[in-house]
Amino acid sequence: MTGPSPDVLVFDMDGVLVDVSRSYRETIRRTVERFTGRLPSHEQIQELKNRGGMNNDWDLSYVLIRESGATPSYEEVVEEFQRIFWGREGDGLILEERWIPRPGLLERLASRCRLAIFTGRLRQEARHTLRRFAADGWFDPVIAHEDVERTKPAPDGLLKIAQRFPGRAIWYLGDSVDDARAARAASVPFIGIAAPDRGELKRLLAAEGALVVLAGVNELEELLA
Ligand SMILES: [Mg+2]
Figure 1: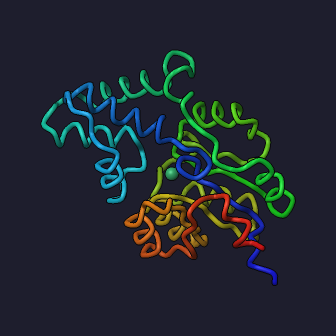
Figure 2: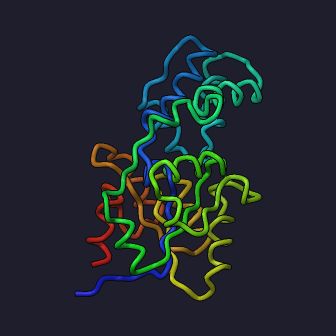
Figure 3: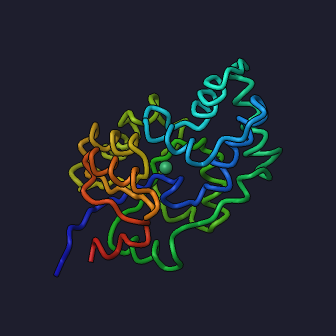
């Protein structure tokens, strides 16, 4: 049996290609702790993320800090966040990231369609991680924070990719409601990613119009088979 076959697979990075529980997520926690004296739980962060409109972890940290009554400026929060995450030269918590695709997955996918990335990461942070896991050559284009005028849930990054591949079937894989909304706004089919222990997220992604919600990117081949 032949499944549906997109021409271009566009991936969100965080939570899809990269496990960021010990990098971005931990940076949010430590940034919030720095200004409030309290370490927020992973559940608290996920809850806020599920509300949507905050795909940027700077915004998310800022909101958590302000909600707890502390009043640093946005710039101070961003500076502290970057100090923890990026460090001095990419030697911060970014080094705690883990690559999710199993060996061979990208090779096999690339043999059947184009692979691209649309991420809210800064370009430098996207490239750093892709290089580290020797995945830099698989994705073209890589659309990062600086490459779009409006961030997700705006569809700008997907529209840019669609322009590059006119008339081709494009799919977007993401793990947040903002990813799903960006896909819908770009009229691009959306594949949700939600780990089995993220029941609420799975429900949300389905409600936002996901074609299907997978437990992880390594299940993608079964869908295409
Ligand atoms: Mg993500």
